[in-house]
Picture (cartoon, rainbow, N blue to C red):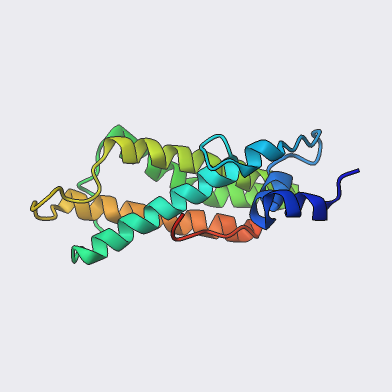
Length: 168
């Protein structure tokens, strides 16, 4: 029989906690130790934490470029930007539902969805100006969207008792 201590020893506190939380209490728990030790997008906790670390890096780079966050998101209009904004807007509903139903796995699954939405946004939307280009209003709005996404991701991970690393 495997104990929680054995699981923590095998994969670490964050991966153990996340893998236990992300499954519904009504489902069979299947813990794949090999998967939880991988640093790849297949590993749910790595995927979410990596999204947070990537956002942190963007914010550090933006600060180095002297970019200030803005409350003006009007320059945003792409499909991926809209997807990310809508996903952020779901956070209060997901928290309320998870609390009312006592189902923390809803928060974990939401964070995975948010990380995926962020990664798709990042692949198609240049957040920082390229080379010697000056920061345009769209860059500032995207960086602000990244900051909001990072905050929600950190809040969600914190609620689950999982760290939100700045670097990976």
